[in-house]
Image (cartoon, rainbow, N blue to C red):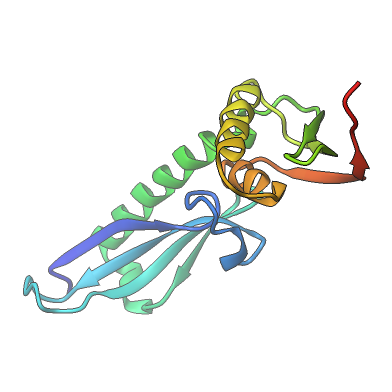
Length: 171
């Protein structure tokens, strides 16, 4: 039925930094099961199934071709995709998270203070925050959003608390 089956395209906010807004909020990641009828390199593949992992870790197989349900190679690719998703799930930043939040005060270039709350703080956050803060300070940006956006792309859940617009004056 198929000359080739692949499961090498993984997508979703759990595996694509910065892609959280592009997908349904309930999706962690997915893998497409692609099939080719011939070995011709100019042939376009067809998605026969998708293996999806929810943001809660549940796995769902969405079939695009009912005939593929009985194909042994497709079923093997689905099992391999489930393993790939399980590995991505185990390595997500929140899997290593200490279940606590931590507060940080940030002073911008003009002396204004922001209070941020990191809701999924982990042991690597302090180092990553220092690196991101140094990058932001070296940039010409006047806004914390660039700095906070970088931390969010690393998988951290960050809130800016209503402490903004407080001017710090030198002592």
